[in-house]
Image 1 (cartoon, helix red, strand yellow):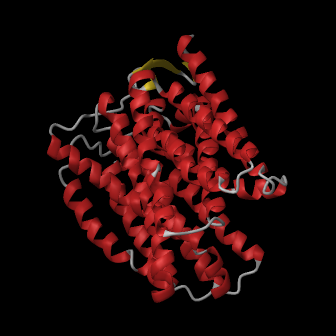
Image 2 (tube, rainbow, N blue to C red):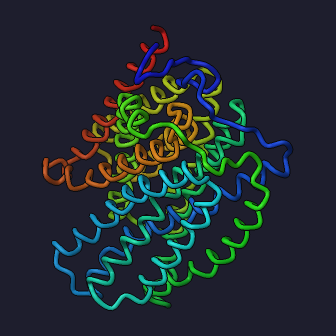
Length: 402
């Protein structure tokens, strides 16, 4: 099948392209472990910061006496920074090398987090939020591409799923906001991440000195041709990212209103992990399209069950079980996006994911605007998201048979 100038197949990697320069496998298990942890550590703090802002939204509004409009601008700046960082740093990573930009991104992150911990006004909070978000947007695309180019197709999806264990940075943010915030205050929640980031920067520097297969000037193809040739592929990836991340975004906001407790919090975040491994297992055997159909079917079934049950516990069950299904697309997108795109894959894969994350960030606002936040209608919205993913997976499946 021809799409966006590339030829698609349904093989071990599912829905991927023929002739793409995807991997330069690492030679031994020691190098593989180093590659994995080098990519993992940045993503972990990406998710920590992302969800820490969600948990601290009301705290920051009270500290700086923010109006509703100012709080909205703060959230919008974080989302905009993520998208801009994916484009700018992704482009630089494709041109100058992924490993080199990994270190630069860590430096930008430290500067942003340090500024947030010292913020003295709404303006400073906004500026440093933007700076930190630039690095967060860059991290996903760079880390996944760095991993994908060093791992062969058979193991790529499994390790990409394991890389998404970094989402447990959200669990750390939840625990810190629950147990450390009342004692140390919000500034120390940001400042406390500076020390491990500096130490981990040393780890990255030591690991990246080896640079197996590092391409110092990775892309020489014409940028305009790469953008126009991958247009339809980009829209497909963007659609999958926005719909699936919207499900997770809504669940985080929804779950904040449910009864809280240590066991519940761990279950909420921990259930993502088996979903990611399940997705990698399904992809290895049946391809990406069927893995996404499994996710979509599970989301629709879970939403319908919670909507129709009428039980007071339905919402709690929904919030705890949904991460299991969300783990499927979260675990496969990193590897799949790197198979979809050829030239400038760091920029294009990172932009598709993070622009999808931006759109998904407006899901709670959309739910309220449509009047779907009461009487169980929230579950109707999540079911519609599942149907949307099923439609995209059906398009993919038809394409592989063409």
